Every structure is written in C-alpha cells, then in structure tokens.
Amino acid sequence: MVVFLANRANVQSKRLHDRIRNRLSCTFENVRRRRVEPREAGSYRVVADVNPRQFLDDDDEYPVTAARIEIGFQLQTGEQHEYYWFNWIEPDRSLLVGWHQDDTHDDLGPVHLQVNDGATPVAHEPAQFIDSHPLDVVERRPTSLRDAVLAVEWEQGRPVGLDSAATVRE
Amino acid sequence: MAQPNSGSWTERLSGRERVRHVVELLDKPTPVQEIADQADVSRATADDELQRLQSDDWVTETTVDGTKAYDLNPVRMLFDEVTDLIEAHSRDELESQLTELKEEQEELATEYDVSSLDEFREQLADEELSAAELRERRNVIATWEAINTELGLVKHALQLYDDVIELSSPRTDSPSTLA
Image 1: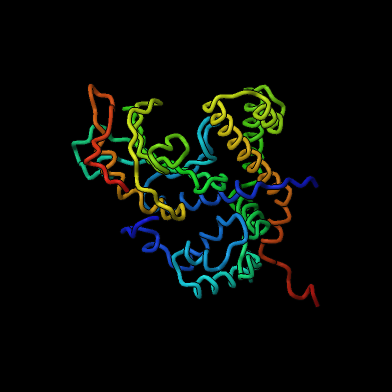
Image 2: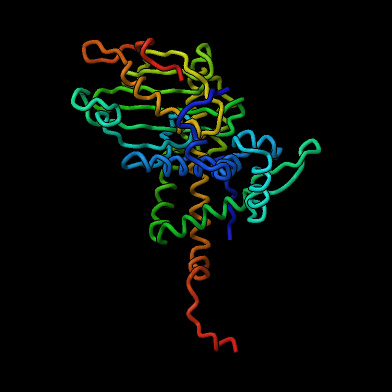
C-alpha cells in the first residue's frame, strides 16, 4: 500500500471551512465549500446564496435580487495573524464589497474594507481588526455587512466608492 | 484586540464547543491558559475539556516552558477525515473525485509547464519575479497543495473503503457461532 502524507495545515483548513459551511447553513441557502481558483488567495471559500432584499431588509427597493457571500481563511501563513476574505458579490452588477485581511494594503492596517467593480478595486478604507478565532469572525462580520453594502456609492450604474460616514468600522 | 460585540460566538457556542474549535486549529503545542483565552473560557473548563479530548485521542498532552500544554493529534484528524469521506460517498463517487482531482493537478502542470509542484516551487526561487507575480504564484501553490491533500485523502479512503464498510456494518452472525 502506498502511503500519502496529508498536509496538516490543509486538512485543518478543509475542516475549518466545513465548520463554516455548517454554521452558515443555519442562516443561508445553498451553502457550499469550494476550492479556490489557482489565482485566488488561500485554499477554500464557503459560498452562500443570498436574496439581498431579505438580507438588507430593503424589500422592494434594492435593485438586484441575487447575491452571494464568500468567506475564506488562510491558516498558518507564517504571518502574525491569519488572512481572511469576507465578500459580498453581486454578479449582475459586477460588485464586490468585502473585508480583506491580507498583505495588499498594509498602509490601511491589518484589515481593510474594499469595493470592486468587477476585478478592479475602486475603493479601500481601514476597518477594525478582529483578532479571534475564524468562527468568531464569521459570527461578527455579518452584523456590519448590511451597512457596508448600502454604503457603496454608484455613478452611472457603476460602483465608484464608499460613503465612509455610513460604514461601521467593525 | 477585538472589542466585546453582540452576536459573537460566545453567544452561539458553549465554552466546551469553543475549546474544541480552538484545538482544531492549533499548529503547535499550546499552554492550557492560552487555549482557555482563545476560547474565552476559564482555565478549569479548558483543562477539563482538553483531558476529555485527550482520552478520545484528539489531543496529546505535553509541556511548554514547564507549563502543561496540548497539541492536536493530526493522525486522529486524518482518520476522521478519511472515515467521513467513506461514510458520505460511494466507492464510485470517490473514484470520480479521484479522476477530477488528478485532472485539476494535470491542468496546473500544463498551464505552468512543469511536471510537479516541487518543480513549480523551484522556479519560484530561481526566477526574478515582481511582487504581483510572486503573490499569484504563491496562490497557485496554495491551490495545488490543497488539491494534493484532497487527492491523498481520497486515495486513503479508497484504500480503506472495503475494510471500513465491513467493520462498521452491523453484525448479523448468530451468537451461537462463537459457542
């Protein structure tokens, strides 16, 4: 029998994202774990489908009816803290809003809130750093997500920035 | 550090559950007090739960700087993943997963014109790359490693499949056969 050694950190990462999937399944529909595309950071994302009008408590006003939340953590990076990505994505408008704890904007501190128009970042602002277990981060971030999504500023149908006064720095 | 916040995991999970979640992400022997702090429980609760986890082989007891500490038992975790795969999938499904994972591995090798992940890593060290190129390659390595890990788990599951199924089936033999 050939024995294959499993990578401990990767097994831990898979198990963590399964836990997150189980947790989100209590709240959202069609929650699944996917392995990242090769050029994305980290190893996994947990993806949940969301109806924005229900989630944002904005019954008939919000202009799209389909969105998804994507959450991923990278473990044991050798850095002081784990990396993570907590994104709200609206495919119909190519909008991404999310908290990123990565090494792309060190000038903004360990965590920043980012808005993308498709693949192009259009706004960043510093966000509060939550130094705790990933499952705790998953518990805390959704409470601020509504404010972040509704703070996106639009011009001619494209996302162009964030109304900083409206976002909760959490 | 985080500020107290409504909706945190302390409201949703019990202290013992939080200890177990902290343990699953340990990457080295960690003192009991540190595990208690991370799980936001008393040292006594952490110690009690850790002793229970040790009796189930989930953790091993050790010392760090003369203090009682615990580390995750990765072998127990590995076998748990393998038996989960066996319980959740038929042999055919696991064989399909194996094929898909190998195809993904081959696609990466073809795209980056290398024969293995090790060769890809060597290129990273040899070539002069910009910060953006380095980040992209690091991301590719992480994905490739995850594919390799899953491939290993599925192979283990297939190797052990028949034995695990047979051993986990209810016994139907008449007790008299042992007489």
